Image (cartoon, rainbow, N blue to C red):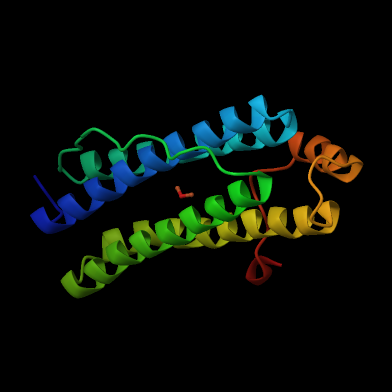
Length: 176
Ligand code: FEO
């Protein structure tokens, strides 16, 4: 039996597609970074792409588990290549912030419908988005420290090496 509303099913499917799109964006940024001589940053984005695929599947399983139907429409093409590393990181942050707003739509609808199961499910994503925004913001801070607005200097080489092994998780203050 279906235990989510048609409207919620649609909203969750919209989010499922957004997560697939995010994976596509980060895959493209990883590929771009690889061609620019930043293998560490490429690894970071490839890891992040996998995270987004996991998010997509998490939503798919939730929809299916509530008796709904997951949909897989086409996803938009990857964006144009960034202008440089700074632009790449800024666009990645913007993408995460937009995704956080999309998650809020689910939370708002769940609240409106008193669908507490979905409200509870969506909280995982609220927390995940706080982490992801922080993670990318930390990269921008590191970049700003390393670059001194000069591209391709030695510090960027160190930053790239550093990011090859950077975790995909970040602790948020309220967990500490
Ligand atoms: Fe799955 Fe970065 O949001």
